Amino acid sequence: MVNVNYPPENIYDPSGKENANYDHVILWMLYNNEVCKWGDFSKEPIEIPLGTLSRHMDQLKRKGFVEKISRGSYKITLEGKKKFYEQLTGKGKERKLNYPPEIVLNTRNYDHWILWVLYNNNYCKRSHFLENPLNINQSSLSKTLNLLIKKRFIIKNEGKYIITTLGKSRYSKILKNYDLDRQTILEEETKRIEEINKNTTNLFNLYKVKDKEVQFNFLNYILKLDYERVKSLLKNEELFYKIILFFAMNHPNQYPRFISSKDFSDLYRIKTTTLDYYVEEISEGKIYPTKFFKLKGPSGGNYYFQSDGKLGKMLGIISETQINKHAYLNKLFSNIESKTPNIDINLIITSIIDESCECLFHQDFKESLSNFIPEFINYLSYKIEIKKELKDTYDKLEGIIWQELLIAFDSQINVNLKSQYEEEIDDIDKEIALDPHNLELYKSKIRILIYFNQYHEILKILDIMLEKFPEEEIDLMMKRASIYRKKKDLNVGLEIIEGLIKKYPENNELLNFKAFWLQYMNRRDESLELIEMLIKKEPNMSIYYDNYGEILMYFEEYEEATKKFLKVLLKGNEWYYYQTYIKLGICYKVLNKFDLARNNLKKGIELIKKEDSNHSEIKEKWLAIANLFLAEIQSNK
Image (cartoon, rainbow, N blue to C red; front, side, top):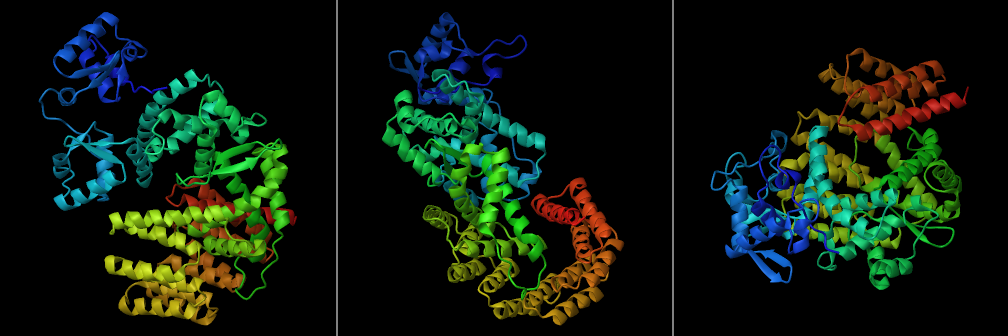
């Protein structure tokens, strides 16, 4: 099966009295496909009448724009490509390009600019990037274009730059970095989905794939798994589609239906060895960043679901909620010297399985889930460890819970997962070699190394980063301090913070951080003294009162903490007030003032749901904390 790219409707069926330009339609088809058959031009949706097709095709061949390479097969020539470019540019008129909006141009991420322009225009010349409004300098442009070509996001063809399928996928992801309105993002995603739909429709028709769930699973996978990544290995795109179809047909939502790799191979004409190899490579995450979890059905068949798909995310939410439910209430804001509560692993696993089989999986998967959930929890622990650290109380607590959970399991991340991320380190090193001044690449590498406790390597990387990015000194040195905290060397971390304070005496954020650091070291009086000093320096900064209350909570001085939080709420309205209400509610709950606790927790929840914010991930976590304490209050009635 060969998937044919067809032009948009406005080209083959223009509105109004204007007739279709059949020369342009034919050249569009040949330019956007390696080869076209005669029948491709007479099929839906373009349906060029045979007489008209014959006349225009002969004319294009005589002009040297089209070449007949075999019986009924045609290919565009170099002159034909030039003619096609001329048609796109309006026959010699100055070509008007679409450029990124201000929110993108303000970032000075040249790779984002280039991908945006190439995605929203058929092609661009080098000069287009040097002119207004981009004005990229020659050196930066050369470096960025070369990097994008090496990553196979773009190609250069006869002096013109064109975005690849892999580049379109990358473009789709970078849209999420910007605060674009939902309609803009929807329109951009729709373009990509429409393009993929054209390729998949033929597959569904050819193999009579009529199950809507299978169709949806397939389309969902194809949107995330680009053929470009395996093109050098799988020369035939049809084989790639068949492999993805196998995953789509063996999703848990298809139970009890199942097709073995042997039966699939016989039915869809693909070698069993080829299918098994790529299913294993893809499911283990060795080809794509995402992986597929494998769940064995009662009859022995394997079912697959994506780690970052709907099922994987929902299982993650259930698992985290159940784990936190068993650990929060005894650990929240407890003193460092408090005895660590025992975690009943079997009870946690049973709770996760019971809830999952109520809403996600068929009851028949219970036995299989009992073997799978420990592996899944290891996977979640990795994801939590490497994610961007958030400066709020919940994250401090969450880290403790997951650390204790792993100790209780007395296990390490499985060998395959570890291998996967070691390979990811190698990939990042290669990217750093190509783009040694990309700060985000170094940060990604650090987050992965943290999981494997490679603290010595991280400290060496931070030294390199400090040389390359001296303007990031405060952030990098604070990262160094956090590594020493993980190494249980709080004194060295404190020396780093004090060195920064000496160098940047006007930076009150460093003093604020020192107060929390002293809290970690159980130096209560010094910690509170520093917060009090900050309040005197900036009495209108209500955040310091909030931090004061949080430190008092840490030392289990809940009555005094409530006074600080009330002062915060009297000072006006700040973005973080939902956190203050929730912490105030927790204090009242500990003090057995249940009505006050309930009212403040509900107020915090109300603010979370009411206000828009860029901190949606943080809000979700505070919402979970508030709901857990409300449930605890309710159970004590």
